[in-house]
Length: 438
Image 1 (cartoon, helix red, strand yellow):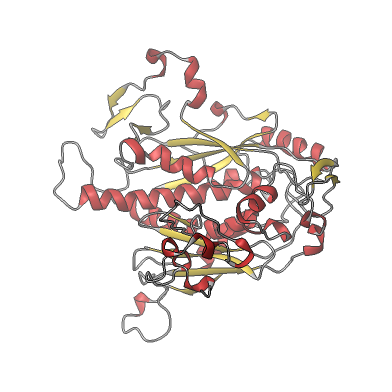
Image 2: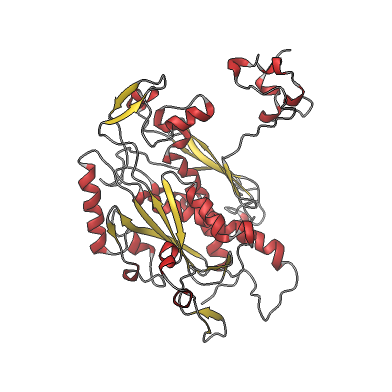
């Protein structure tokens, strides 16, 4: 029988063509032997996954580091939210490469364009609707303008240690060599663009604010009591190139990055993220706990290797009486906790306190030092990368972590509203969504 990739159901073909109906001998005749199934495997379904995030506020990112551009499609954005390219550009500029010596030297303007989902033009009788979201999918694109594909010629055969080069080949049998393709941190542009929209919705709806900062670079660790999470501002975070709100520790972090940068090496670190004015009740018991959703978002980021909330692993050194957050009634009659070792989440559900989470990032695997590796044809080799790379991902990871947290929270707000807010509330215990707390 004749085969065409476009006729197979895992690429969106009509259901009349089923892989399970093919004879094993037919499967062996697929081009490049792309699919082989044992004789007793009667049903096989393959679905392309991994590029879409969220359930109600859904974001699909697209593009590659050295392709024509990168971006996202946002589905589920509420209508009548004021949104402009400048709203998104502000966040993209924070993530943009080439802004300081502690980031990659790649120069990109990262100028965004919104192609759909915004009301514009002179067709509206009510001009106040112009510049508002329409409820239809929002497409955002950022062109790539500073590709240097020749930097990656050596990587077409040699695998970078601890990079996705080898595992992409193991999984797909083919990969995009230039810039790492989808494994490049440039993919996060789409996340940051969508996160800018999510942040605006959260701020508009409930006054919720998401902030992140560098809390550790290599062995330089910022003590948590050095930062007032109630009074922390974006200006404090953006006051230096490493995005640490404490000037003294910021200088030490910059020195730590400089020390390895000049040697062609790299270091990792930790990003602290806080969320203020969080609606109570976000999250669900058991499998869909708020920590689980946030952890998935954080661990989907390039180079992330760990995530913790509140006291995190340090809580294992405490007793229950030391760790428990005692309740009290504040001056507004609201139930609060005196401490916040739970990190704003109890039983997988937000309690209204500040959410505190930390995300650990490994050292950048692409370095300009000699490394021992192997080639695609299984020969021993040496590799020295001669292109551009981040000596530490932490400074540019800050806005990306914020974006992913915002995406989770918008999705959770929508889920909570659908399940618990469309019916009459128990006013003694439940608070209506959309009311900013003071």
